[in-house]
Image (cartoon, rainbow, N blue to C red; front, top):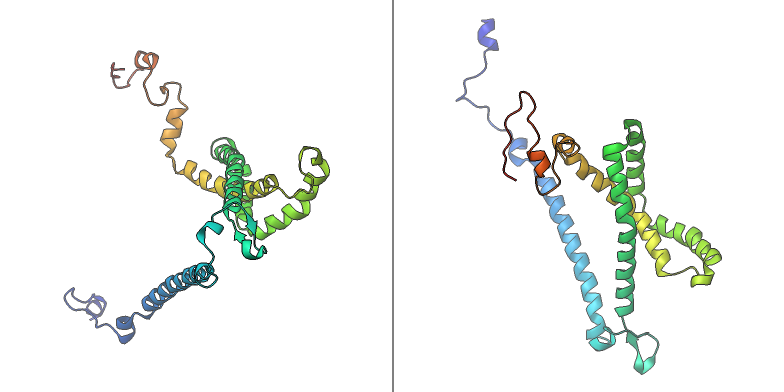
Length: 231
């Protein structure tokens, strides 16, 4: 009798699904939340686009006054809203910041993945995650209160008379994106299989992209499979 009670039910006999399982409320709530997020983003984009188009619909500002190099919003009949200087300044600051931060970030990530000891990685990796989570407004506040006065006081002779410049913005942006690029590059380096990293450090490995003649003509080690003689 005890063995019959402990024996599992036959595979063909299944327990009926309860009302809670048929409704599957957690899945439906997750789907509703995802749809709500998509709708909120769509409404936000529509709000921004609609209010931006009012410049041409309600104010009847011609397009050539917007796509120009002259910014004069209080010019009366000659009012212009040229956005080209702002676009060029944004692209310039972005390119300079990327040129500064990318080599430093990739080099730091490579050092952490290949050279740094374990205790150093255990300190730098959490520190990077903390810096990634710092809001951009904090970097901007540090740039205004620390970097701009430093540039104004020490580099006034080469053009930083007020401190507010594209170079200051590039330095702040480089400092802001450096932890993110380092963290992503570090994860990429760790994703490389260990066998490939050890093979590239081997003295038997040929240069990248082509086998060398010396590596092809080296004598085989005892017990190693024969090498191909093709170059």
